Length: 252
Image (cartoon, rainbow, N blue to C red):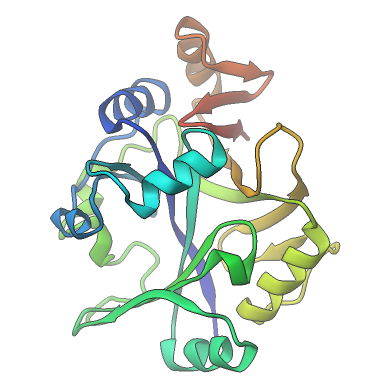
């Protein structure tokens, strides 16, 4: 069985300003806006980064789960780690075996979805999905949440992949162990899980914010250009780091 990092979801108070910053700084383009997220009182935009996706959601109604998450973490930030698997049934069986609650799930002829409850996983939402149909397991293949032709929006000039998601936790060892058990992938160096195409890194909370998805490492062939634009917008926070949507983007 394999497990890939296929999508990262961020949450923002307002979608448009974040969307504009992501385009200006990282050079990425919107590929899809999913009308289905209105069911959760949200609006969204998805951006390809290589063959992975970055999603931003924002509440458009009161009393949404996304809005409560914004309040809990003190503003914009990381929201979900979304993975793609090659066989969903054993993943669901494993979750049931571990007693992890499912916060949301759905099945249709194209897609199988399972979003795990963050109180049981620790850190943030952990989602495990399977794409069905022709080309479903291709690394650059269809991905239902990103729309029918997401590949057309790809621009890899500045960034071309999400290499690592960093999860900050009060007890990183315990949370890493929990995610490892769910993913059925042994820990590397105690605090890292190596997926098929990326890694998950667990770290202590160090920015004054509670547990959550705190940072992303991006493969960035256009690093110098990104830093130049980020400087002009006062979004640079380190030698190789920019800060967008309450999230640290480390440029590799």
